Length: 311
Image (cartoon, rainbow, N blue to C red; front, side):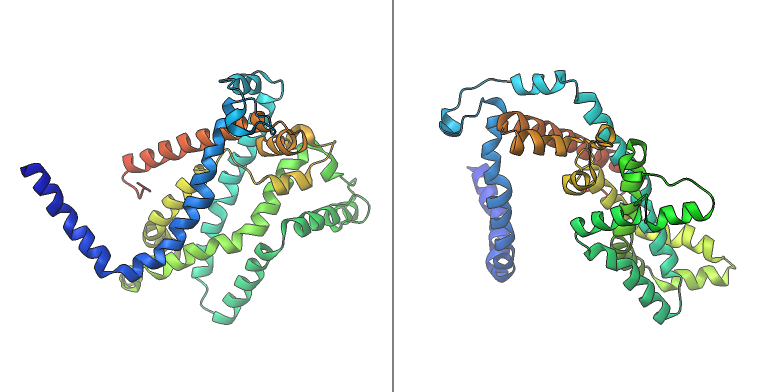
């Protein structure tokens, strides 16, 4: 009786808060409905990863095959190549694409001329709004071995034109550099917003003590935005094994496929083009489980070093 009475009294304040602030919860409702309809209900279809899905029989009518599709993927001759390509591109992206917006935001925050600052922001934000299809088309034009301006510069200095998009060894550098160009300005916005929340009195006190700009960045700005950096780092690690297949697929061709074939392009080809739905679902489930494990491990690591964590 006492336990039941305690539970009822504990739940009453929460219920009162919901009733009192019902307008706020009403605003939250569309988001909850969206996630429930588009994120949770589709998880019902994950069971086809453990079935031999036959469209005419439906999900329930298809026979169970257990871990057969997973075993097939792990035993595939492409497995290690897919893992290597995916992890290498993700690693390079994390090493270069992630810290550059932080450095850019720290540098831009030191600019005092408002007009120049706005021009720089506009120029660096613009590539984010270019569609992936147009962006890849621009990459092919810029890197063309016959009339691309990059190869024209190489020829100007006496070099031999390079067929960048037809060389497997050039795929990763081109992908990462284009990613940096497209995302740096936009990704820096959140760091610039975090920098504005730092108390100006800290900088004033540091200047009185004779601290240089570099020392103020090192000891005030970076620690001030560290919680934001850690949250975004955890989120980045959370999709470490997932690469947006659209850009990779558009840049891919028969000459560079040895380094450009990643898990998501393989899933697209086997699942949608090859109609091997169960096999593709199994690969997708493996990918998401790997991402979830990395997310939890990174979150625990952030807690261990006493930094901001997601949960």
